[in-house]
Amino acid sequence: MKTIIDNNIILDVYQNREPFVQFSSQVLRLAETKQIKGYITANSITDIHYVLRRSLKDKQKLYTAIDILLRLVDIIDVTAKDIRKAFHPEVSDFEDELICVCAERAKIDYIITRNTKDFTNSPVPAITPEDFLTKFFKHL
Image 1 (spheres, rainbow, N blue to C red):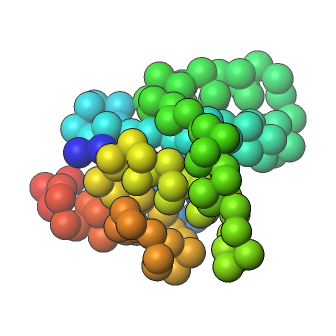
Image 2 (cartoon, one colour):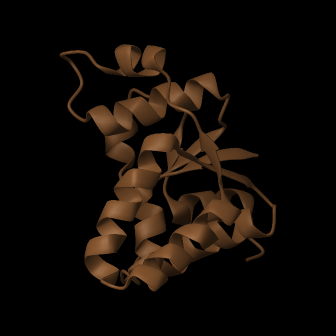
């Protein structure tokens, strides 16, 4: 199953955000063990790097965190066509719209996010980590 793992899920784990870290870390573990195919968009890596750089304040820890992430997920490129398709006046969150556009192009099955309300018009269904785990991985 192909999934885009939204930034908030990754940051839950790396920043140990309670109460979200439990389910978010299980999602990343599924990607690590190849039970799901995890993806992030190319622009997400820069956003994650920016946030972690500010919170970790240690260059080696930052490098290690990003290096581990890049082993867990694959990157979906963001094209000029994706940007043009995602950028329009009706969009309230350009970053999330860009994820939707990339997810559709990459034939992603689910977007795993805590912000499902931001993806209500997405052609790819959005699901919370908890609901995803309950629906597909009850044994965990």
